[in-house]
Image 1 (cartoon, rainbow, N blue to C red):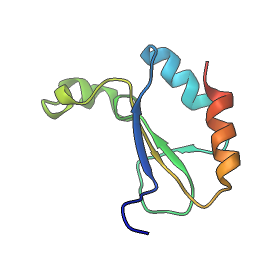
Image 2: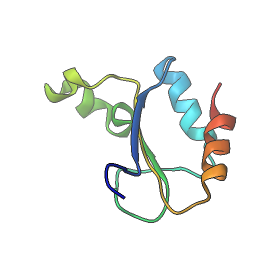
Image 3: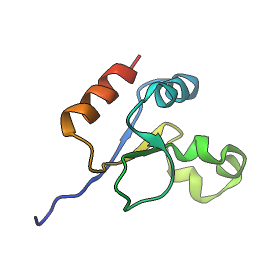
Image 4: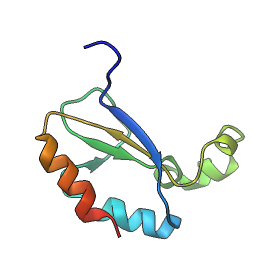
Amino acid sequence: MSGYSGMLSFEFDGTLIELEAFVERLEVFTPGASLGGVESLVEVPSLMIPDEFSRSEDSAEIPETLVRVSVGLEDADDLCEDLRKALP
């Protein structure tokens, strides 16, 4: 396929505490920073290394509630349902 990807990013509409709870409620997506694997991953840069994130000049342009998702080989319906159930 041309023009498609298994990567998605979005800004979570809530506080950082609510975002952390959202990530913890996920059952199919696993927190992680690796890309290109077969499992679905979720990454929140500001939660991965919060001290470095707050000090980094590069992080000034990255929203605190940015969520990055890498879609793996799991069933698409299972992934969608996992995200739906984890939302507040």
